[in-house]
Length: 154
Image (cartoon, rainbow, N blue to C red; front, side, top):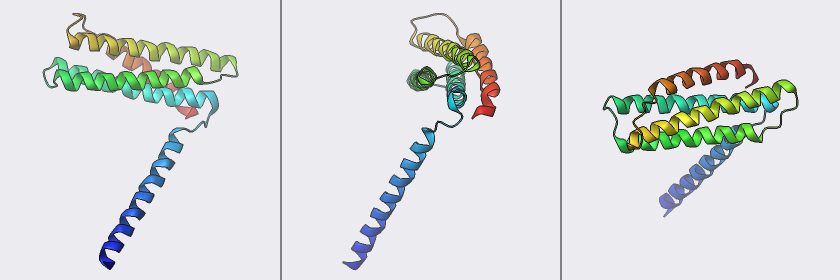
């Protein structure tokens, strides 16, 4: 009986520790450091990562190294991340002309990336014969440039 009790106590302690760690991690993701520019920087990192994933996934698909199902799921996940990044940028409250301009540029780049991911989804589903490879690559480079430009504000 004593052995069972100790095992139960360890599991409870582990569950509490994991729960506390999860709360800390989520709190870290919800940071507002850097004001609006910090928000734009974090959104650019998120969007850049999402688009890089979509680009790689589509490349694997076009070279027959990924299935429709895996590719579709990865593209959906990438689009969700892009829409989340877009929402973060929209919800920010720019205070200066520079922040307003950065918000507009960030939204433009993120929305273009989302359009490219949708084009990739249409190509995978067979509803479009357009090949978004070049557009994905160009937009990936543009988002990487934006991410690097905003890096100091993270």
